[in-house]
Image (cartoon, rainbow, N blue to C red):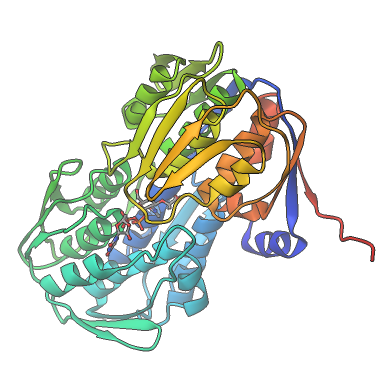
Length: 434
Ligand code: EPZ
């Protein structure tokens, strides 16, 4: 779905129509990771050579960042499923506010623009449904690397003739802050250490991508990154890792519907936190090379769950797994420690008959023997995924409004679920005849 189609879709207010109660069966193809493609796309600003990223999925968030890049003067084109990017004549002050506000990950252009061009103006990313999403750790780290930071009205202006290495300690292992600082340090003068760094697989993929451009990065995947800045980076062709959150979403839908599904290609070690929880909940998990099969025979068992930075359980799968656990035997205790407001899916699940009590950042989910289809409204990408999973497992028909949230992070979602036997289709909501 390209940008214009997406805008039309939003305008048409499409709904997903789902008739639930059918176990999912079969195989599903997993795409390249949205949360690896986005920082890697930002990192292409660090070189004037061409960069080719094969097999990048058509996702709205990817399209948004491509539009931001084009606004900066970057040449971004599609050759089949490959994304080809070349940042030669870049205006580091031209990032468009309406696009950066729409998608927080656009702020990842700040580090590379500043590092390569010595100055940048970047609109402030909006908060969003799941939290205020501050950028204090990004700014603190860039200042440590030598940046002068001035806040304007709705934007930040950065200046640094030359960035220099620094020892940075992140108060929280922020994924985005780690990524922004990693990109800036890659071409700063001297050595940089980033302690309490994020260890997510997508951060490791960004580090590997930077090394393929000629950067010197050590410790990726640990809490301490060491970067030796180089003067210049060259082009590359780089295959981005597969999307562990997309794969996890289909596995959780399989658990919720009592199905038997194989997802691939995946990197199983990236799915370990989820696979451990699915086994605990009674699923039969088979790891087969770069594929994972889940068979859910009988009712899910309740489990306790706490989201944590990697290698803990990923916050992006908290809402989807809660939808499945709303049908489990027993009461699950789910604690969201990463974002301050990531329970917006709960009122919608309750409308389907789920029994969920909220106590601050903890939800008590007492399984019911069935959910009933309802008209549902999604608030954000992963909450929308949770509602689709609940609808697939529920008795009867559901509609999921605001389905455009799903297009931000899931390619061909209806088609993939339909191939697994789901009754799911997208229709424009017919306007009421007054
Ligand atoms: C990335 O967001 C992902 N997005 C998110 O996925 C994911 O949920 C999140 O990491 C956590 O894993 C992309 O990679 C594009 P953070 P990011 O900075 O980088 C606080 C999805 O659905 N914080 O690790 O924004 C922040 O408020 C999306 O695909 C600060 O306080 O996450 C939050 O509470 C949603 N100050 C916590 O850290 C800062 O300067 C985690 O945020 C930065 C962050």
